[in-house]
Image (cartoon, rainbow, N blue to C red; front, side, top):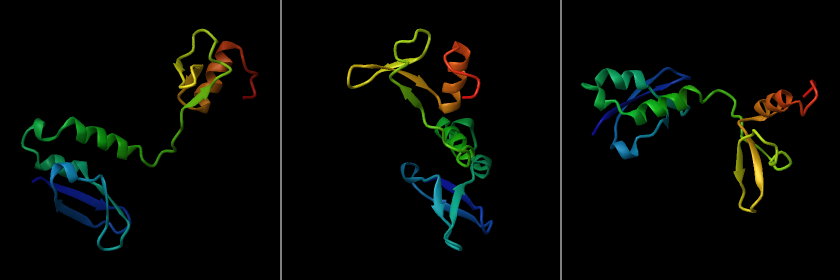
Length: 121
């Protein structure tokens, strides 16, 4: 079983835990202060003997944790813009087409570019 390294952001405690790969978590509770301890991928990488020991799944989880403190922007759907050409669209369960945007800022930028919104949005 692999050895995973975690680091607590509050008390800076380094935790090493031997866990089966399928049960490894990205965040655990620090035994010292009960705050979240995040997996330290850099420390895990030092123990890897080959590149195959450090899988693409680890890289994906590292990127996910790296961006964990950034605000989440939920996708925006717009039924009223579903018929506008040149926009990304999906078909809803109700059979209608919806225009899709990455987030509200992307929606406003796209509408401004198409001339469908005033400069204040």
